[in-house]
Length: 151
Length: 291
Image (cartoon, rainbow over all chains, first blue to last red):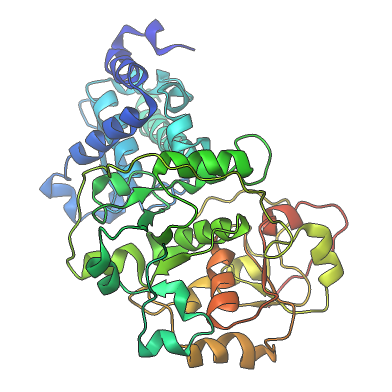
């Protein structure tokens, strides 16, 4: 499924188009820009490891906290070490690409989005699996957080 | 023209001291003709965040592995990669990387399969260079393309395949994976995703020495006496023995192979790169469980 079928996923589409318009080596530089841009955790979450889930699919220690707020807004926080820029870059793409979506729209994001942004050759499919794992965990968490409210 | 070797007391104890250099030696020799510094990391972007000045990047996954067959690149492709990076056959290549030189040792082993004569590791790797607050740059190296020749890979001297390991059973094998993997509780290291092998366990008769046992806290190799104790005396292995090291896909065991072959001087030490992802999925090969 193409993300373009969902107008709400325009930012993800834009990120994908940006990557695809570049040569392989420049795609890595763009990923590095994303890695540099991963925002620090807001102070209120800094000392709450309990809220965060380890993404086991990634070799580097990356932790995510996908939050559905009381007002049903979706927020994503992520942290990964500076020594793991690839993983930071993946997390940053998702933080930017998913921000502003409703929880329902997050669930609609195609699972294979990480395979469509043109990084499998430069970064290798094995490493892209880490980003797939991140996205799957985000969607699962959002589904779980939505469930009680549907009852 | 190869660059002269580093000599110091620690290295002098090793069987092949010419295979190691210190971070200080690298800092002093940067820019020398005939010296190429190569960075190889687990993280494909780490080099771009800042690397040793003049260092070229080599990615083990996309540049040393064949993209289709489970094998390393052939002589043609290896020469192509070397040419593009500006590495000549006679150059002194010094490799370093993240995670205690785990991937750097893997790259060194593959350079050795192609018979590149002068290839060395920077003791302590990337983390030691950074810990010492040495210079890093994001500037790409301006190396001109080289004319690296096409050399046939030697798969006999330093590499073994599954059937040879079957014939080897009963002789020394070193399993360098984590104790959990060795005992058969999981098929990949605790920090890695479970993947790759249908059955857990280890090759019968193998001794478990996790690869990082060979390194000090700062990522440098332990002294000759310590390594001799860990790998030889503890298991009654002699330098004349045939020893095979393996892990999950042959990368961590390259690090141990480096220790066995170059630091301890076991001339017949070989690396089994099929490792557990092959052995643990093969039909009717023997498997042992537990410690």
